[in-house]
Length: 383
Image 1 (spheres, helix red, strand yellow):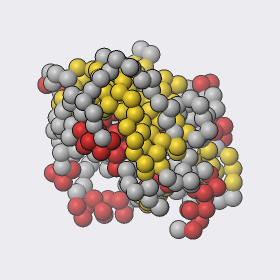
Image 2 (cartoon, rainbow, N blue to C red):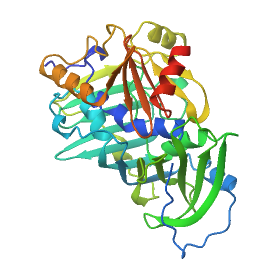
Image 3 (tube, rainbow, N blue to C red):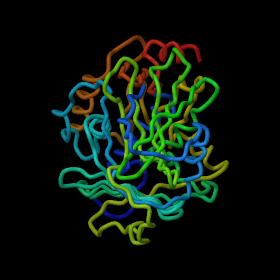
Image 4 (cartoon, rainbow, N blue to C red):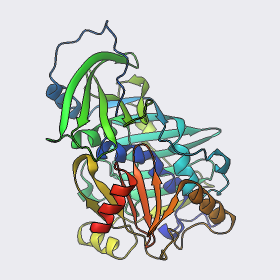
């Protein structure tokens, strides 16, 4: 394969694996049941109201830190371990399900609002997302594939939630907490719980409980560092499920600024590089209208929000594949994997997990929300 920069039509696996990491963030933003973390009777902190804890967390957006993060997921998905790696280097389906099951570890480095690095550690491999100012790189050491994006001035100081082609960017616990806090509204009851220790740090805890019978969510617990306000852990669980559905938190953390070298990335000579164009303003809208990026639709609000993504250009009715989709054996493996986790229904296929439902329509649109599958399909049909 030519090692020169490629267009997004041949998008690399290093770009494709990323959506799986951000799914828990979407779940948190839509709403989520959380078993309380074990309280530590020895943790005595100045008393704060729930609102003060939320304000403390919101004030930490410019903090610098590094550490190790562990994610565990138990969404009631079937065992798809037999499919892992069978879809080839370009199989985003198995990558996504892999990151949504079991436990995974990542190294996180943050220096203010415009420098971040997340390293997802696999067996004998590493997958990275690196941001340094307006430059964002993704890298997969196993497939030797990289993708690069230059952020527009309009992007502001926050790292984007998705690249222009619809690829999502992985989240740190702080970014997950930001999504969680955005869901706080009159339909949410916020309460303070016992103080705890996380990664050796004393921390406040708040529980957010949605007053929404339609959502699969019972509550979400946010743990906030008592000194810096940086969110240290987010734990979510589904209604009727004893074990947490998603838990993302630090096992170690250091609040010194990481070395600037951490945010410098140059792809190796053998890397296959995809250069992702970044339109802005009217150009961005035209880019989406042209089908190079999926158009997004939002139904409802709060904990029952449903997100919809239209198929990219080139996708055929009744299929999520497009001209850049894998072919041959990889495509067959992806289809088998979809058949294992999706259930055929009128108008498409559905995936029901303990925390979120997904509907893949025959027209190629994909809808997801923290509601049950019947409610999801009814909302889509009514829009």
